[in-house]
Image 1 (tube, helix red, strand yellow):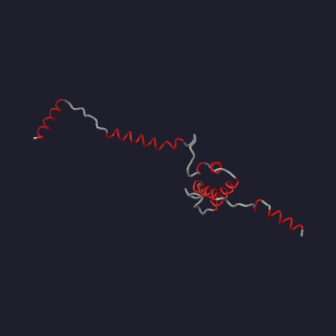
Image 2 (image 1 turned 135 degrees about the vertical axis):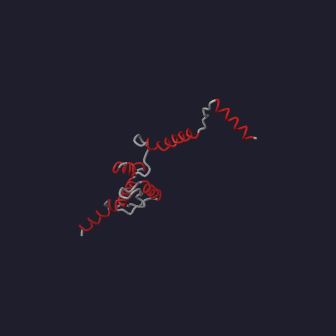
Image 3 (image 1 turned 90 degrees about the vertical axis):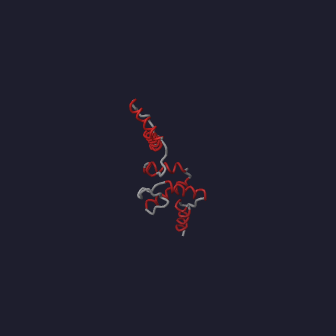
Amino acid sequence: MRIIAFFALVFAFSPSFAQTQMTPAQEQRYNQLGQEIRCVVCQSEPVATSSAKIAQDMRDVIKARIIAGDSDSQVRQYFADHYGEYVLLRPQINSATWALWLAPFLLLFLGGFVVSGYFRQKTPNISGDDEAALKALDEITLK
């Protein structure tokens, strides 16, 4: 009988039976992080909407880390460390990614510069004889 009581106490106080309920604030963080982290099996699908087994495992890790007290950035960094920056649907700006963040703006600026140069009116080089012919043509068309 003592053995049964001992095992009952061991199971009752073991970490696997610890309370894993999240507060509403933690639940909101869990949902937000699930939308920000990419499933490593599914192509460009967040773990929150993926039905893959690994996505469920990743959601479990997110939940465990939130309950353990990790911040959102620590959870993101955990996944980035394990799977690379690819796993983040919104990559962080750092020395390796600043060019990727600035490239669209740079290309837009360069494209605008090229287009404005293409459509810019330039004064044509007209010789004296051609200029006299154009004036005579203008006089004819105005009459």
